[in-house]
Each structure stands twice: as C-alpha cells, then as structure tokens.
Length: 417
Ligand SMILES: [Zn+2]
Image 1: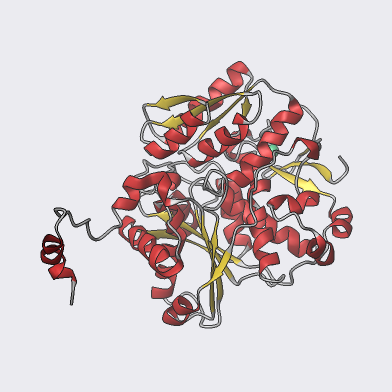
Image 2: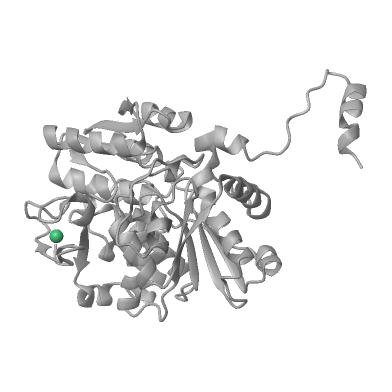
C-alpha cells in the first residue's frame, strides 16, 4: 500500500517497514517506551482527502477517512456501522457554565456501545490481512467486548483476558459473541501482562492497547469526525477520559494530521481526565516526569481503572504538545457527571464515559477555561455496560404500590408539590 510510509518508534525514532517483522513495539526500546506510530504519505493523502470529496462521500461511517487509515485490503472491512456518531450542541449548559460553546460527542452509539469499536474495526482487518487463526486482547471490558463482536464475524478464535472485576454486562457481551473468556484474579494491569505473555508464547494476534500500533489509528477517527462535523473548525478544548491513554493520543494524532493536511487551521488543547484513585498520568504531568509511576488503581470507573498506562509516552506528549492538561476527578464528581449527561444531554454514560464531563465541570469551577472557549466532551461508553456503576449515580428509588389507585395516591404524596 502506498499511503503508509513506515512505522516509527516514539522514543528512538527508528523506522520499521509496514510489512516487516516488527508488528507491535520497537525491539530496542521495549513495550512501554517503544510504541510505534504509523507515518503516512501526507502529500498523497492531501489529494485524496479534501472537504469537497468528503462532502460527496455518502459513506457515513468512520471508513470515510480510509485514505488516512492503515488498511491494505479494504475488501476485508466488516460491514458494521462504526463512527460518524452524533455531536450535540448544548447551549443551556454552555451559558450556565460561562463558555461560548459546548459540544458533546456520543460515542456510545457504536456497535458494541463504546468508542473502542473504532479501534477493533481496524485491528480486525489487520488480523484478517495476516490470516492469523487466533486473536487475543486484554481489557478492562470495553475493548474486549468490542474485539469479540468484530472477530465473531470471522473464522478466527478469540481469547480474551479481563480482570475478575470486569462488569457483568461486558462479560455477557464477550460470552454472547462467542469469545473464550479468561477472568484473571488480579487487576487489569496483571491481565494485560498475562495476555502479552500468552500471545508471545502461542503466537496469537494481540489487540491489547498501545502495543498494537493500529488501534490509535482507529481511535483518531473521532477527531477527524469532530472537525468535519464542526465544519473544519476544531474546538479549543477537547475533554477525554483517560485510562491507558490510547484514545487520547490517537485523537491528538488525528487533529495533528488534519492540521498537517491543511484541513484545520488551529489545533485544540487536549484535556485528559482521570479518576482520582487512578491518576498516574495526572501525577506524572504535574511532577513534570516523562513517565508514570505505577500505582494500585481504585475507582468505580472500571474502563479507566489503570495503574500503569500503556500508552503513557504518547499521552504525555499529546498533553504537552497541545498545551493541554491532565485533570483528576473524584468518583462522586463522575457520578454527578453521569446525572448531568442523562438529564441535560440525553446520554446514558458508564462512569468512565462520563469522567470527561466531570473534568470539564472541574475546569470551569477552577476558572481554567476562558469565556470564549469552544469545548468538546467525548462520551466513550454506554451506561448499560455497567449498570451497577450507573445505579450509584441515581438519587432515588422506584415506588412500589399495590394494584390500587388509592395506594398510588398515598405513595405519590411526598413527590407531588
Ligand atoms: Zn525505539
């Protein structure tokens, strides 16, 4: 394929041919520091990806950006509607919070109900291109259920590693899609390492975050869509929930590529939001370190409950390059954000999916944003995927009555003013 130049290590900048022996990370720098970036021929893409051509393109999925995606055999793309998720403008909250414009992108509306489908849809094509018999991934739940959905439509066997604490709905998705599910008695970080060892030992194709260079490529389409949906005027600030950092860095790459292609004139600031009990990137950024110190994560937001972010090098670089920030929010603030998204925007978000909104609210309270700010908040996962988490956000319970109107009247009394 002519539009990919090569893969490049983010640390030593050594390059690797796209169809060479190096598939995951730079052998010289190792899995954490040696994550690879896909480098394209931007002069070629500039001719293929223009606002006029996109306007004429009736493919309203993220495959409308195919020239900027690492696919060699487009005929292997699975026919699922990924991406082109709605962006809602919310004038009421913008006015209340004293910012110029607030947009919310609802990425719960993907096939498996999370943003991770953007990555899985790309990774499954890469696996099919390689004709591998077995694929694997470690995940807090969403990446796995997404991966299982896509691989279910192929002949490949799927073996998934999740922490024992993964929410039931996500495990239900995995089982329903036919994956072999290995529940690890330990954290996500431990499940990740075990999966990596198994993949190496048995030669499985690995979709685990960060080590697979193509995942961020899929995730960056959220940024491409945002710019097109806002008529090529990027927001000033983009708030994203952050666990491993792959969505965050992927989106930043997407914005940078559009800038390089001349499709946007200004880059946004990337605002990464972590849960207070799982904020290694916030700590590293505040202390000016180049990498994270591992910690034991503790948060109800399972999708961002990560003690050792696998995409930390790129994520820390994204926040510095974009002059953005990392922000930590409490679990209580996340629960409040779930309520705000439900009642003010009409989106049912899982805790991790709402963390970005909590980060915006905190930034406003701290006076970080100017009054002319145009802000985008990403909602990354659906609330039905973690119903126990969402139930912690509700502030009242159902009223149980007998089949009797007078009982209804009596029980409703306290609710009627
Ligand atoms: Zn390297």
